[in-house]
Image 1 (cartoon, rainbow, N blue to C red):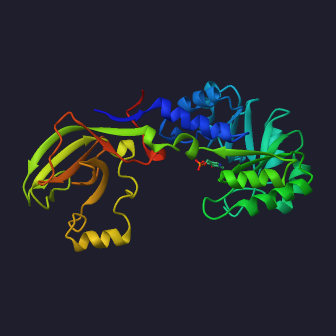
Image 2: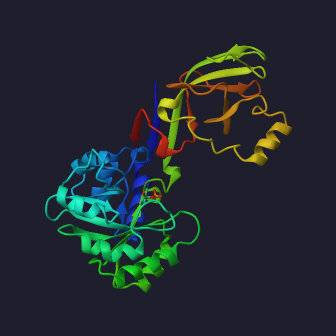
Image 3: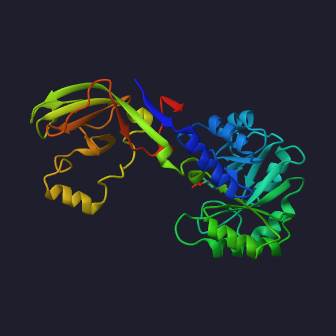
Length: 344
Ligand SMILES: *Cc1c(COP(=O)(O)O)cnc(C)c1O
């Protein structure tokens, strides 16, 4: 059984190289499930691109990337005294965002341990308030400051916030001229670089680098079984009655792969849902839209997905694929685990 990601490697690498080449100082982000590709694979791709730094989400993710990438490995999640899995390595760069943590980190770590100071932004996630920059600078001790991180929201225009923090850095005693920025457009980066020529602006990028050309990626599920069903016939763990005559398809890909764990993007809008109910659509019959595509359309789950497989309902008007045929699926890569990834 397999739920597989097929990568058109030439096309996929061309996108990554284009993003890398037009973004000086880029720090590729390879956190979580490695954007669907796996962190080890992206670590090797990052090394091949020639980047000197890479970013992971957590300490737990760091060893795998340290092993396969020869440069600096930044941990995006901040150091805290209560974390049990912190590792120290001369190539690992910690993120700090609270003055109280600095003496404790300094005491726990070798001389010259590298840190990035995260600035608090409108994200309101982690980071030093700009008024704490002086206190942070005084508390660094033997820690080696690599830069200031500015993590911005995805919504709205972020340029003025980034520029204000860059100005606050330059006016502060923090001894660095590097800023690591997230979620600025190419145009915003260009303006920031022009306004702050003394600063080295280094963008941290994952999605557009690894998932910027969706056309290079195809997700395939296999039809494992197929059954003809009649309206009213009961099927599955929950013994749902089928809304019409048609076919059941049992396809590879279930909750263990991350299928069905988020609102599928198709008919999720309120207006589309209303239209569907008005037309007597299958969500009016209590079915949910699946990410699996047959005959060019997303199809309905006959019941909620199982761990390793999903049951789909196909109305009798649709020609069902044969057992053993592959169908495609539109998934969210950052929450999907594939049985296999094939580069061709
Ligand atoms: C995840 C993350 C990024 C990368 O975000 P993308 O949207 O995948 O490019 C950058 N910076 C920080 C701090 C992050 O947590």
